[in-house]
Image (cartoon, rainbow, N blue to C red; front, top):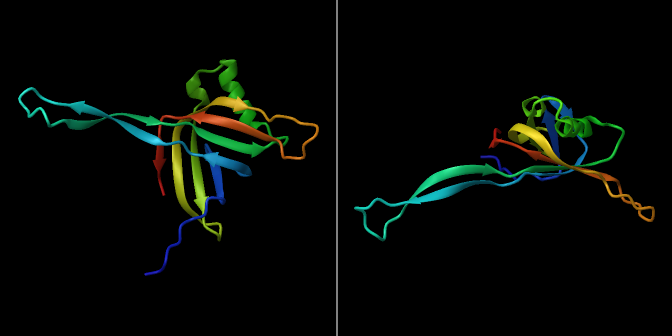
Length: 147
């Protein structure tokens, strides 16, 4: 059997409704959690508690990228801010693809009904020489490993 090394975390790309977007400095996938519900019937031993699964929660996904003249992500957030269209019109399917060193897709996560809930423009500093980085947080209704 061929050896399978773990994938490195620096080769990735995003697809937002099948539009490929590259050049992100960082993509932070939030955690997924199920809240347990403790349950016990009256005739059961007082030492026994059943645990049932409750609500599933999906944390926000954070995107960070270097500022360019591309306004697609900022305009996506502006759709939500303006409130001109219903929120359902701003929801997008987002796929995060992790690649191996040869550039082949090896792992992927899909966000369902994602929409930008927070936009943090870069801080500017006349004394610095860092790259200007924008941050966008995506709320979502599901994160699923699809590959």
